[in-house]
Image (cartoon, rainbow, N blue to C red; front, side, top):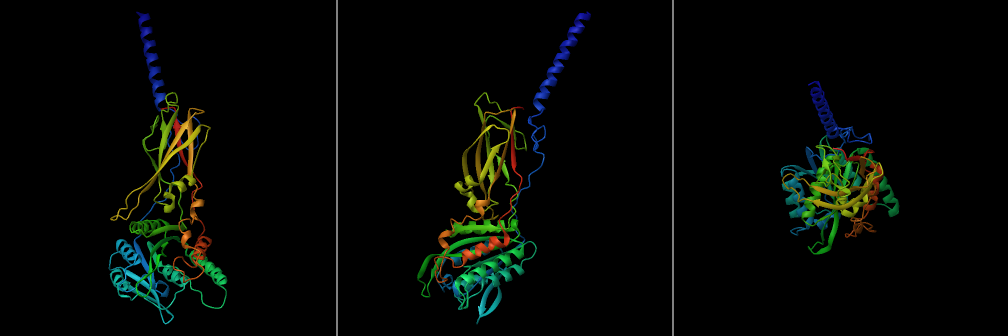
Length: 422
């Protein structure tokens, strides 16, 4: 009898040990390398800080009306600029909202207010035609001084600097660059320059230049500027007017992300962690990383540019292959004025050197900031009368980056844990 009791106790003890072993193996340490970015259960220790796009409380429009812009505003003659400007304004603000018209009267600078609806009438009736030129730094000062907390300002102009005097063109452009750098640097704000194109017409309504560049200069807090940049760029692209956008003064932080369906692993809910990797089946696992791109300059949605900026490596020596990259840009939501762009990257891990591995990844955006490939055909004008290009725009862009500097990115990285444990 005693022997049976002992045998039964041993069976129960062995069963208990088996249960404890099963619990231990299922809920134990998936972070076998003790990687400092994850706890033992595979949870990310430090939550990443992401950049977010936010609609501003107020958008203020400023429009340059000068002799340099006459070809866009010929009486009873339609141009893409006219249709785009009204479309952009009416989508971003109510029709009764104020528009500041920057012009001159016998050489004296005039700052006049009207409404979106009345400005449309001005464009159609020829009131926007003017015989005087304006100096861009003056326009910027007026615009920046009117920006209040939570508001974003948009200057619509062809951004041509018209130097006056006997000094050489190069001396004027050098001084112009310095002035732009000082004004924008002192503003301590983010700036996005959106380039567009439109017909430029002569006094009789005949087209002189089919694609003449003009610009939307957006200034404010980076999260608000990003929202307005996406809205304006999308509306321009829908009308075939969009060229490119460039920007400075942004703090991009870390790129936000999510994951798609993965193979040969199981995702730990709410975490960049994947468990139950079985390397004896297919020899590799694939993690579908989905990187949000709408926070960034639009050029990043180009597959070649994204591939150039995307960086990834393993921490503990396993093989990593960056496989297929797919870029998806969804239709622009006109009601919400939102853009959705996503890069899906296949990260394939194989030949794991230990029970777990950590992928480190980030976006190296340094080359993105100053890439002017799409804008280049419209730069380099040697005369302000060349309407196929933008005279002085090279100096303006140089002043943007000298005054504000390149966009910031976090010195931290994003991490993905892959483990054979479950």
